[in-house]
Image (tube, rainbow, N blue to C red):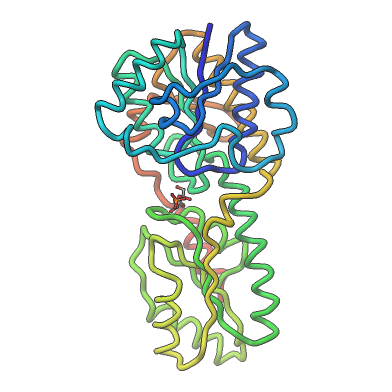
Length: 318
Ligand code: F6P
C-alpha cells in the first residue's frame, strides 16, 4: 500500500498530530506514506515525498501543519482536479488522506469521482462540519478565545468598559458561541441568527441600572464586524467601547490535549479505512465513538447551531 496525506484550506491546531498518526499507522500496516506539500496546490505540482517514522517526531505539540497548506484556485477548476487525480495515479498512490475543512472535503469528493480512493478528516477551527461532534482545532481555538476574553475581562473591569470581541467564523457561529459561553459574555452574535443591536443595548442598560459597567460582547466575524457592532452600541448608549479582533491568533498555538487525542484517533482510523478498501468517507466523532460517513452526505447537511447552548447563554449572561 502506498498512500498520500495532505492538509488543505485554513490550518488548525492538531493537524500535525493527525499527520503523525497517518504516517505511523500507515507504516505499522506496511504502507509507504507520502506527504504532499501545500494541499491540492502541491498535489497538482506533484510535490510529494516519502515520510519516515522520524519525520513526524516532535510534531504532536506543534500548531500549524508541517505539510503546509493552501487555498488552491487551480484545484477549483475541473482541469486542476483532473491533473491532481492524474498525479495520484502517476505516483502509484492507492489512497489519499485529506485533512481540512468543507472546501477540502468537497475537493476530495471530486477526486473520488475521478477514481481516487480517499478518506477525509475534518480539520478546521470552525467546527462547521456535520456528522462529527468536533473538528480538529476547534477545542484549541475555543481555549485561545477564552484566554483572550479572560484577559480583556481584567482590563474591562478595571476601566469599567464594554468590549466587543470578534472571533473567526465566516459562515457559522459555533466558535463564537463556545467562546462566549465559556468566557461569560453578556451577548453573543452569530451568523445563524439575526443581529439585534437593540436587544444587546437593552441588556447592557439593564446591567448599567444594576451598577454593572463592564461587559463583553462576542461577535462572530460572519455575523457583523466587531467595529460596526461597537459603533452601533456607542450610538445607542452614548459610551465609548473597545474592540478586539482575535483573527488568526485563534488559528495558531499548541493544540490542546483534546485536539491531539482526536487527531491521533482520526488519523489512525482514516488509514484503517483505506486499508480495508473503503473510500469517499469522512471520519467523525460521535460521543466517545469514531464514525465514518459518506462525504457527499456530510457536505449536504449544514451543522446546526446548538440552540440549547445559545438559550442557556441568554439565561446565564445578565
Ligand atoms: O475556515 C477557517 C477560517 O479560519 C475561518 O474561520 C476564517 O473566516 C477563514 O478561515 C480565514 O481564512 P484565511 O486564513 O484564508 O484568511
